[in-house]
Length: 153
Image (cartoon, rainbow, N blue to C red; front, side, top):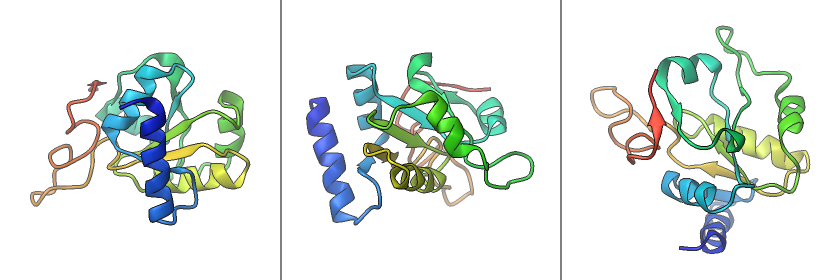
């Protein structure tokens, strides 16, 4: 599937789901976009602690941006989220937002869209996905479960 086909499908998901941002991609689609176009950026909104202790995507550093949505250990929203995003991105870039399970990334994509970023996409399922019946992550969905490149702590 071409990058344009992926983005069209993602935008259709956005329309169908009445999302307040451009759309949503699966983890596999996100990786395909990143590999096909070096201008596509993945914005990892997890805390530094999550990235350090749990792991991170393994993609080119120039395409992997870390902008925390919440601060650790406080758990409070990062008041510098937008200024930090603006330091490392441009409003016309394709931005793919990633968090642990796909909740914070939706909020980040929405906020960025509200502030002039027109090509914001949520990465469905997140890095680790939701919990299984035993309460474990990385076992039912997400970037890791999909066998996509990542490195653990």
